[in-house]
Length: 196
Image (cartoon, rainbow, N blue to C red; front, side, top):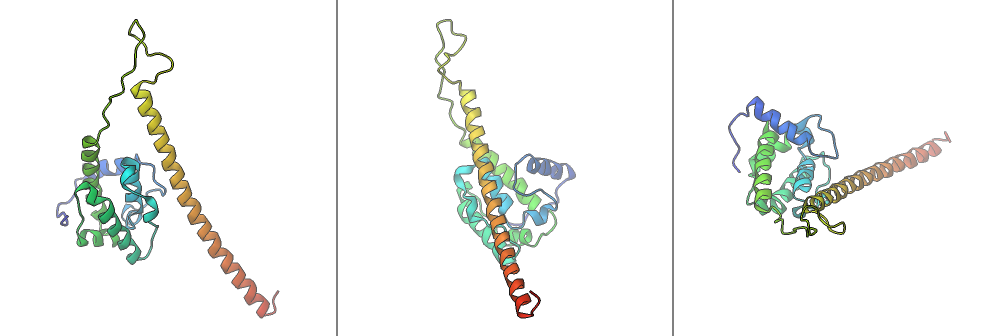
C-alpha cells in the first residue's frame, strides 16, 4: 500500500471513529494515533470480525518503536496477506511514529477489506427448520437459523472477552512481578544501609 496522499473529510473521520467505538477493545481510545501505533488494537479489530485469521498472542503491547514495527510486520505477513493486501514500510512507519491521520487512513482501508472479506465468506444458510404439519412454527427440539447464528455470535463474543481478559491478566501479572522485584531490591538496599 502506498501512502495515501488524500486528506480525510470530517465526515469520513467521524464514521471511522464511530466504527472503532462500536468494537470491544482492551484499551479505551484516548489518542487514536498513539493507541493504535503498536498494532495491538488493530489485531483486536481483526479478531473481532475475522477471528479465524489471527492469534492475539502474536501482538504484545509495545512502547518501543522496534516492537511496534515487529507487530505491524507480523500483521502484514500473517493477516493482511490473507486479505490480499500489504502495507508498505512508509505507511507502517507513519503509524508507528503517530503521524496525524495515518492510522485513520489505514482504518478506512481495513474496514473496507473486512467488509469485502465478510461478504465473500458469508456463511450459507443451509440449515432450514423442519416445520410442523401446519407449517407455521418449528418443532421445540429444533433451532431456527437466526437463533443458531445469534448463539454462535454470543459464543464468539464471550471467547473474545475471555481472550481480552486473559491478556489483561497477563499484563497485570507482569506488572506485579516487576513491582515485587522492585520491593525486593528496595528491601535489600535498606538492609544494606542499616535502615531495616
